[in-house]
Amino acid sequence: MAKSPDKTPPHDDELERATLGSLLFDKEAYAAVVRNNLKPEDFYSRAHQRIFIAIGDLDARGLRPDIQTVIQELKHKGKLDESGGAAYISSLTSIIPSGANIDYYIESVLDLSLRRSLLYVASGIGVKAYDESRKSPEILEEVEKDVFELRDKRQALSYNRINEVMFRTIDKINDAYLTKKVITGIPTGFSKLDEMTSGFQESDFIIIGARPSVGKTALALNMAANIAINNNIPTAFFSLEMSDVALAHRLISTEAMIDSNKLRSGFFGNSEFRKILDVSGKISDAPFYIVDMPNMKMTDIRSQARRLCAQENIKIIFIDYLGLISHDNKNMPRYDLVSDISRSLKSLARELKIPVVVLAQLNRENERQGHQPTLANLRDSGSIEQDADLVIFLHKKQIKKSKKDETDDEPLPHSGNYTTEMIVAKQRNGPIGIIDIELLPKYLKFIPIEKEHKTQLN
Image (cartoon, one colour):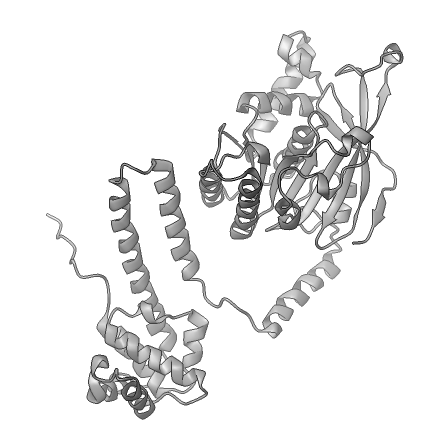
């Protein structure tokens, strides 16, 4: 029969004493505290917490923490007796020969501290689970958040010396010099856009905005297909509007270059059917993941995104689209609600260190006058404009009609190819400008137009 675990939280009094002893013994040892992000609460013993705080206060004032200065510091604060007394503090240096193993001691103390924190979170799960006033997805999101905060807490150094930053920066510049790579991020499949942006960069919050029926979803799916199918980069597509089967239908039409109406009706020949099967096999082998969940909340998106990154090593996420993301607080004004969602998406990109590409609808203001969209056309909140690192608009420029439709006042869905402007309206770290692309409506596919694009610097 397995032995039941000790009810005392994980800790090691000797390791805590060795850590404190090293800090008192070696004047250089306190650098390891900063390096490993050791906090007072990482000590189990309250007495040890007080001694550690006294050492930190002395160091902050530029004084050398040793046995006598720490005793005087604690006496001045009226905490000497609560810290074990002068004799106990004097004994701390007697258990170590030197401060050489300070990193080992600190890492061990941190590991035990993390275990105690995990037990605390685990005990809280039971309390939350019994609370019938709360919904299960809300509890799960809170638990995930607690666990991720524990992970982040264990990250060393929340700051870096400029010389360390410069070393990594020069290393990247040197790599670029040696390789001469134009694309340093994730390639979209649109060469002119990739030249302007160097690809979609990690931690970037990217907006693709347009009026309805201009091709937001088609463009995003084209990009996602290029990334996952042609470049074998793990990609996730969150669809709040279309089913996973509808998206797969579009993928087949786009990649096989077969009229989407034919796919729906079944009016295609044997050669086209073989092409469909070949393309379907190619798509099936790609690291492409579709999350099909209507009425998705930010809590759902964060949870699924974290899981996909952890389990499938996802490198980029597309979300279609922002206006359909639900919020837990339905009474919040629309402006504040969208602002909160926008900030959450930006935070998610930074947390996961991957690009998060979000589709957004634009208001009608400029459409009435036929003008190009601007950042002011992003619907519901100025926060989207502020939070986004890269904003791309789609604007239908003109329509190339086939001869049989030249007399039509309005184009039929499959009557001709749409020339569309892809407008890079904002880019934090690069130029803005306009790129012409063409939509092939039969295949729901955008293709580049090989000519110079108009670029201007920010």
